[in-house]
Length: 191
Image (cartoon, rainbow, N blue to C red; front, side, top):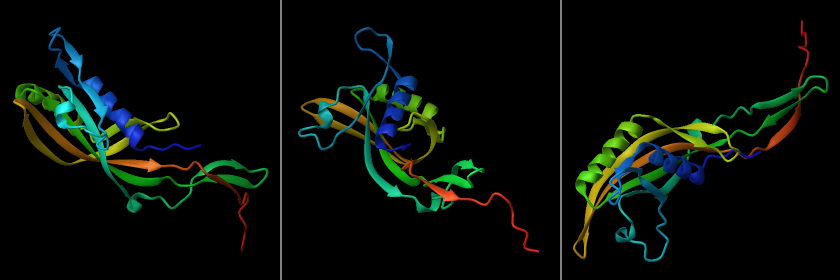
């Protein structure tokens, strides 16, 4: 059975983390509410920064790279049948690094400062992201910051502030393929 951690699983985990850890004051009710978060689609025609409803967070996957140095060449034993003298071995998961951009948006610099304060205190020093893989199992993916940037836009007299964080997140593609192999049940005495 496949048990991948890829872009969809990472996006869901980041959105959940943002909803669970970052609050803003609703402008109408004046009550704290979870920050809105969504996956950004740069291919969408006409999508501009000015179309993002503030305050919010957006997630954008901008690259992925194979991580051969993390690959385990030893195939794991899934199960053994000593009576038959066989074992089921699984293919090793293929490790990758996903490069993800998390943007926080606001119409007010002070509001953006409060958002980034919550984000930095909850996420930046954590070092991992709790992700549910494609088979429903919870995993913990290593996270490291790759950079950050601050921008602001002024379009038609409307000012918008943006804080961007880049992260490298370790993930795996697990084919779930298995093979039956013969095993030795009793050691052979060569003496």
